[in-house]
Image (tube, rainbow, N blue to C red):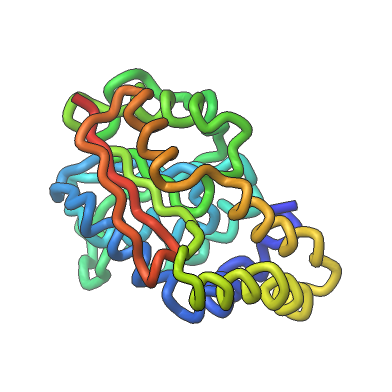
Length: 239
């Protein structure tokens, strides 16, 4: 399903979020506050938008691994890397006029069985993907396992606004309008864009996700609702 919508994924993310998606990713990175030498693992990376947002905060000694189960998504990140990461010059020097100077690695991997040793990363992130894994608990445990002590898990995910007026308006947009717009731009993909609101509605609520993060070994877990509760950023630390 995700492979089928990969070519229009970025366009539809921007349109369907009314342009807020970039600011949500930026806020997730700000709340994580990685140091310039951080090692970042971004799971369910899609076309690597969050991975590249992290990369802009890192220096030459840091790096980002963008991992996704769907290779068709990851493949679309390649042109972005060519545009944002400068090629090396002869003699080994780099042209660092680009906003990204750290390595960014693209990888196809299963979020439930990560191919990394324990204590590898300083940050493990996932944006709009954790509700799609088959086992939330297993994914969180793998993220924690891959972190160094003191490392952070950051999750950016859709949530449901609770206000009586805005909540109803958003529910109409999410369940009625969004699938139609998605199918208009990507014909024949109505099922895929009907899955989105269904998965949001069935996903655990913010307090439940916080408790699940804590049960997997994270401490100081906090949730930060954005844009009237349309999305929430969750941050927890491995002791």
